[in-house]
Image 1: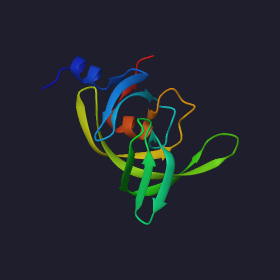
Image 2: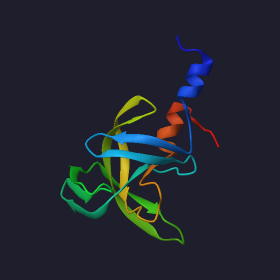
Image 3: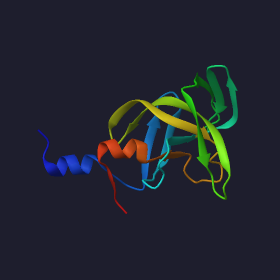
Length: 130
């Protein structure tokens, strides 16, 4: 059984955490409890065809994944952006996470090409160390 300290540290994240997304690569993710949407992965040249979504990652890889859903994101100034949602497997802080929902959007102006949001953090009762 884990001690409280072990449990607390396991579910405490830095605002920027290394993440490895299976079949895509290593990134530094922004961990943001203020984002109540899905996690986000940067994608360029996003194409949706029937039940598949294809895009180019920040590492220049062209990938295709099953389209799970779409979501509308308020990107500021009252502007809504419709984004595809896919499932990804990744490792974060030494733990493996399977079938986690990510929206795919253009994060080229962001330093971190991956954002980990509240929908992922909340079930973990996670905290972010500032």
